[in-house]
Length: 250
Length: 215
Image (cartoon, rainbow over all chains, first blue to last red; front, top):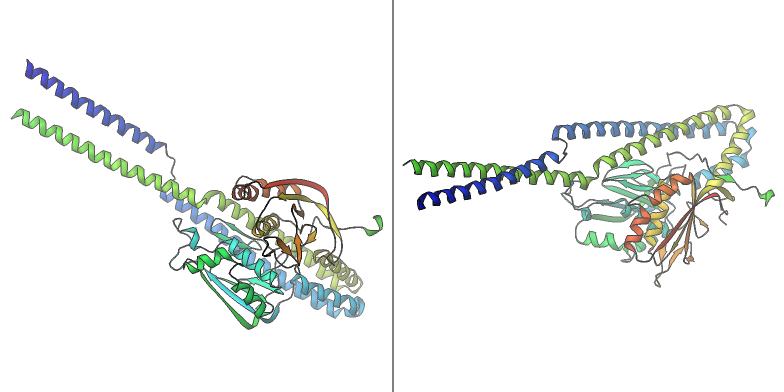
């Protein structure tokens, strides 16, 4: 009798263990099927489609920009041919304004900065530590410092930086003039090499970048150069919202 | 003998359950990892934004090409050539700050002890949202403007002018787009207020923002 009771107790305990285990497994299964994780093939297909779409737009953008540069050159040439009716004074004013805006390429002495993600860093890997990536904010800080050093013209990977240029990031992609740029980034600046180098070497100028370079997270190199070429701005300039203030009404 | 057999059967069941359990736990942990990867990358929303930016930019570039093609036709005709050049001069004078300009836009006032980098970022955010002209404390930002400098006292200086609080940033452009760019969740204002204690930012849409020419 006692043996039977013991057996019963033992069976009951075992059943309890199984019930608890079953509940636990049930809970796990529920959580498992409730997490709506895209299956890997779906995700990679979608990513590939997105990448194709982006590549298509980027290709288009390159073509459109080169067409704009070509048209601006054609217009300048046609204006020079029609010089007699346009008057030389107007053409000179126009030329000076274009140079000031950034519509002409320039060559001269200056500084070239090359900045790159940390060694062995994969930008596309989501686990990458953000400290070892070059961010849009780093490029903005560099451009700002170059401007304080009175750089005459600046470009990043061949994209001319003008007054209305934005340097932003979308995820890990950096957009300059809304144009995709990939590391390494070459920031070229025309101006006094001494003044610019002095500003760049000032430890208070780019404190965060200096720290990350020192910790070997970021690769940063700046050097003076004689013949730096800064290309012309190739984006759009049309303004929809700006109007001239009518002085006579004031 | 029967009991021994029973015990073995039980042990095998428990073992199998444990294996299954282990498998599930591992699977679950892996799924959580996947979820966190997706969150880290901010993949989905960002890609759509990226595509939207590219699409918009390409549209603007096509418009610019249309304008330039019209201009080329005009220049080829001697009669219109002079007008076209004058139009171009007017446009560039407005862009380089040679004349006073006005337009709908945004007025942003920042009160608080902030670093120069926040002004750089705020201006960038407005440009990224399509601002056509930006000024800081009434100083129009052009290609000739020096960058934001910080002098040893901690004050921010631009074009050798010390900027005093409150900082006023004005921008000409599509008002609602400019405002949304600043006030969106996780946008620059939210990040600024999280980073710097006690900063007050007031954003107002204005029918007319006027910017004086650069002397």
